[in-house]
Length: 392
Image (cartoon, rainbow, N blue to C red):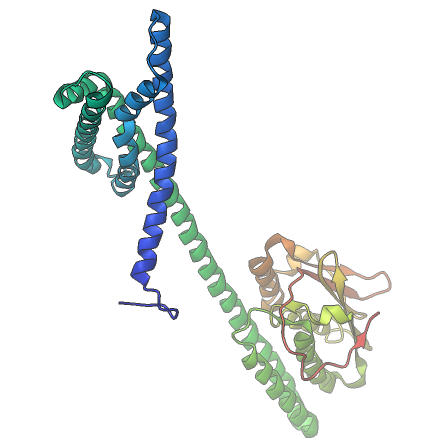
């Protein structure tokens, strides 16, 4: 027998759970049938009062109880039978035979219970009456009501069964959508990483003959990027400080390619460094700024990254002075893997709560603004932090 660590058997837990369910149903059943008993006792009492002969109140309550008490005790079992053989599903016809049998037993049980209880009661309080006569009297007067009550209980159980099926179906659908979303996110990440590595290796190859020490530095930084990528392979989100560490290594590689023409500035609020973002979410934006800025235009360029808490979330702005926004934001996402996948990842993870947009700057250049809802997780302080200017 399977047991838990505290020694309680799983079978005992299941039994206790079943007992509590039955007890809860029994309480509801007694309350509902109790209302029926009181109603019947009141009707008979008023009828006798109109004719001028009133018996003791206990007499009315006793006979009303005899007419329903077995039904009250059996209702939880009938409800459970209705859950097991629902009459509201696709296979409702197959449930009719067991319910027809149970309904007949339900009527006979109540008739027998009324006959026995009534016979015992009349022996002490009234003229003695035959139990068979009392049982027959109940069948004649109350069997139709009990028959309707049986099928009403079964129908309610069927509705509860349908409700549970809908909930289970919705749960399975949500789980399936979650698995599909996770698979789609993993696919997007796997697309970004080879794309990024290919571009970085191209930069290293360009420097091999022109500047071997610079090429060696690029490859060392690339190994650091690969280490970070492997460390965060199974992570769905990482602290912003870790993402900025990755960007620091990446921009270091690009500075080897463009030399003093490319500058970098990072400003982050202290609280923002602990907020979490999807891995590699900022790198495609920085790469896009470099490629469409200093990569296409002469002169110097400066990449400025600003991170701060904003409207209950994290806002990161990536500025550069040499880019040109030559199209609307929506059409920009159709160009290349990096931007398209970045937008898709934000939609998968955060839905409409996240945003990404581009806009030109009045004095020249462009800015990309990304906003994600706030997420914090307890984690140790980073062993290394990028060279950032911490905002106040």
